[in-house]
Every structure is written in structure tokens, then in C-alpha cells.
Length: 78
Image 1 (tube, rainbow, N blue to C red):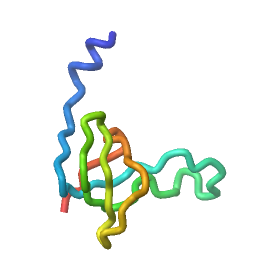
Image 2: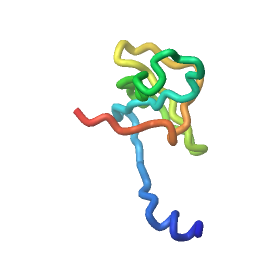
Image 3: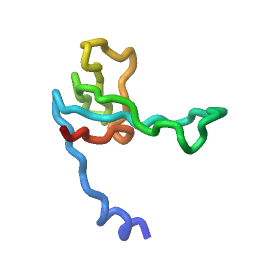
């Protein structure tokens, strides 16, 4: 069963200076429920680590204090 799933997974290669959106998760108790935004951004990838994390900055050059997992990012197409 795992083989059937993995053959459909497409790699999402990110590079430095790509624009990405970050997936928002875990907002428990948000009164907007299903109408709350599911993505935030756009952000710029400042650095990628070999472990699969990305250091992000916003468009005003403010840096995040912690890295974000690449699984929580989507490419932002302009």
C-alpha cells in the first residue's frame, strides 16, 4: 500500500529566493472555523537545510526566529 502512495508523490524542490506560502495549522478555538485563512505569506526562502527545513523572511526582510518544515510550504506563483 505504501508503494502505491509513494509512486504518486511528486518532489517539490525549493530554491533560495523562491516565494512561498506557509500553511497555517492548529488554530484551535478560532471562531471563524472553516472560514479562517489556511495560508499566510508570501515569504522568501532565505536558506535551506539538508534536513528539510527552510529559513524564511517576509517581504520587509524580517526574519523568522525558527525554521519551517518544507512540508508546510507551497510555492507562490506571481
